Image (cartoon, rainbow, N blue to C red):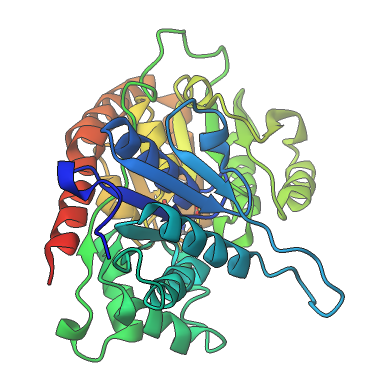
Length: 385
Ligand code: GMT
């Protein structure tokens, strides 16, 4: 039995399991995978599609797309089993030192299953499993009675668990750990490429612009944002640019028409050119009901754009109220609208908060600050007996 493929020279052989979405967990997993590969580690990414950020990169990771096949007996195709099976196949060939599962379900379970299965083959030592919790994998999905016992087991069976904010770590402990010592969770915040996401030299557009980026799921409450925008901007020259697509988009169009701002709400759909969209805006808007971190807000901050957000989950760990942005209670529509109005009428406030936002992104959440923490964790987990 040998250790991972490259153990002798310090190179690690890393498997990354993630959702192939535009959403933050797919972005974090991809950027981490690419940066580990650039450092010389052997990195394999497993998913049922190529994550969009990876598709656009020429970075040296091996992508394994594993899809189940439709069979009349299945009500839906079990991609998770195909991913698990592919992980096992690659482990037997290459000797994965560790599996990094992003988003507890199903990836922590897939990683655990692959690790257990690998014990029956003796070419390589079983891989260690690290699970990174991103948000709704605990708060909306993982703690639902339908999945909670399995989520709890996947957390306990992981060799290490990380969460992207203190708030998410706390909520995970509340849901799953009777004794804190039984499930240690390390908080490693999300990170942003501050060279790619940077203030642009292009001038701000003629009318003040607010921007939002998301997958338009109900948890993001984008129709609520459109309602607040209508309150804040019905009598002034301003626009709201909505980037992304998802289930609530039609409702947003309806609310914009109802609020008399249909001509000032711009729907761009899914876009990759985010820095160019974020940088000229007066503020980035986030109106979620739950938000463990808010990676899109951090990307805006790195572009020098202040954030106006609801004070939920881990958002206040990213945006300092009154410094790099402004926060208000998630139920306070009028209050939120008045913050939007302040950003629309006060360019000096926007410039001051924008500069503070950029500084905070660089000082606390840059690649350089955060990525070494993951690599150190990998080494610590591998050093455990
Ligand atoms: O948990 C989700 O809803 C999906 C996930 C994603 O893939 O975008 O979002 C979560 O993970 C991001 C990356 O860590 C965080 O920035 C988001 O705040 C978090 N979303 C929620 O908590 C709603």
